[in-house]
Length: 137
Image 1 (cartoon, rainbow, N blue to C red):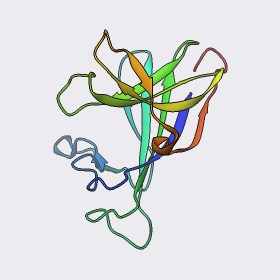
Image 2: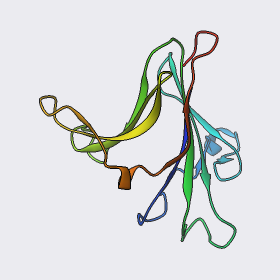
Image 3: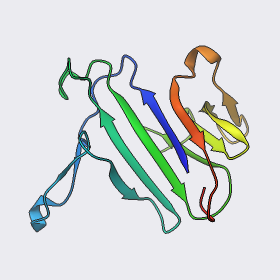
Image 4: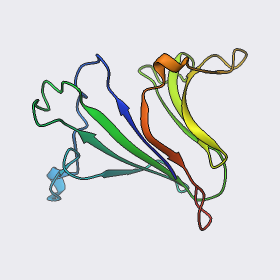
């Protein structure tokens, strides 16, 4: 289980995914600022996340908001997650962790360029852990 909290920094408030659920099917949307929301990424990967909105701001403004994430893999391995605006991992930022190492933020280059750990000044994760237990990482 890879768990961490990351600051949005100076980015705008998260857009579109504050609530999940299929309201058109009668299932109420879940407020991801109140509870962890889940997204089954594949049969082996589950992503849990919650948007943390400080009491002195709103979801629309989202000053100093953070996101708490847990990535759960059915197996024992290093795990990581990355975000892209153009569906290409090259040029994206990611978080990688293993049970042997503290999770860190990385810049993801093209295949030939590889993965590069971000400088300490950009390591904005807090409460970051990666554990393996009962066949899950």
